[in-house]
Length: 108
Image (tube, rainbow, N blue to C red; front, side, top):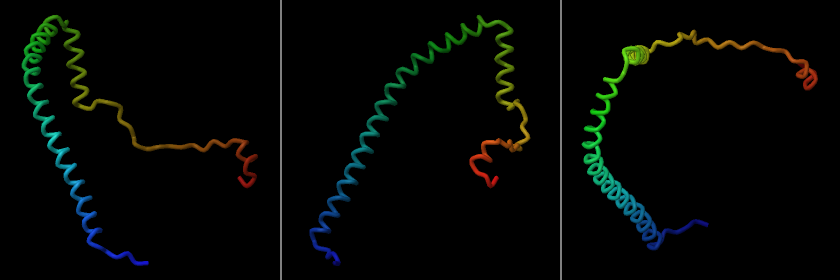
């Protein structure tokens, strides 16, 4: 049986598509409002945190010993220069014969 397209079918299709787009527009507006609010709150917190963190970092740097500073410098050097073990990139697999395989499959 071939379905016929009636005006009611077109109306239902239009309403369905309209609802989907309306929900998408509402979600976009809500997300934009959240980003505006988040930017305002992080600016005020960031100013206070940056002043506090720079003072704390300066104080911690003054208290660090020369060995600590050297360890951090070496760690950064190794991290940025990718100093690690060089691998050949070859995978090897050895076949280990087990007696139970022959018991399970006598054709082996």
